[in-house]
Amino acid sequence: MKFNIIRSGRAVLHVTDLDRSRAFYEALGFIVTEADDENIFLRGLEEHNHHSLWLKKRTEPAVEAISYKVSTDENLDELEKLFLQQGKNVKWLKKGTQKAVGRTLRVQDKAGLPLEFYAEMETVDRLLQRYELYKGAKVQRIDHFNCMVANVEEAYNYYIDELGFACSEYTVDENEKIWAAWLHRKPSVHDIAFMNGAGPQLHHIGFWLRDPMSLIEGCDVLAALGYGQNIERGPGRHGLSNAFFLYVRDPDGHRIELYNGDYLTSDPDFKPIKWDLDDPMRQTFWGHEAPDSWFDEASTVLDIHSGQKISLDEPVLKKRKPQFVI
Image 1 (cartoon, rainbow, N blue to C red):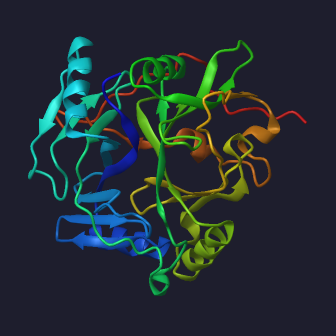
Image 2 (image 1 turned 90 degrees about the horizontal axis):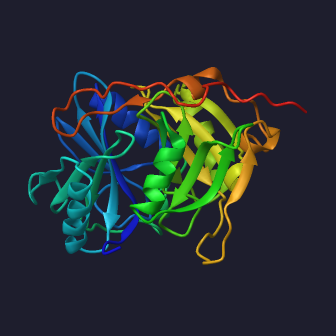
């Protein structure tokens, strides 16, 4: 491959009330890099790029793009060649048309997700040792996206064969069909995960925390500020990925995972870990069972050209909540 996708880079979300959103994300511990009447640009404490989360004021909540950083600007041209060969209709956004970002390439992927690729983003001061700014869960950096798609196995093959991702862990059903998969470019468990469901939808964006205690302190701050009902699931530990987790819903329903504790995947002889769908320790190594909303609800994604909502396809595998038999 003539391109190098480095990592998950940012998400562009539509929200309906910027003041409500700002209060919530600051409570979580995000840093506001810039804001105006129509936009908020947020980042984690260790991030040196301008933002990893862009909130746009709109009439309805939605996902405009999930973005990946690539090594060089030339990588964008190579990606365009690939997508055109596949018959995809790409969209270019020139440098200067988006705040702090160089030219970007957008495309609807195999599953219908709105992808964006960029090489250049303005840099800002890292705040890693500005401990007086550590608040809430003290969010450090963006880590991954998790998406509901109708055909996980098809998405899995596309990202590995065409985009150069590698698999760290995966789940199969009773017929050995891939139900969910965790794929990475950076040397951790994942930059993107796919789960079986009506799709395409964005299930959540994961942000890395420095330690498990930050997650607990985040819960305390959320509850103290009246956001206790926004905590959807956790805290707990996943069997898959080994991560300590908490899932929260922002004021528009977008799901954020606060995440810590996965492992290195950079060795070339690393072998993906296989899980059975009904293994009781797969999703929850310990902690409370996930609520139905965690399986049934996700964020709407938009067409990169029209800006309209993408219609959902029903999953090719039977959609069901895993049954844990102990």
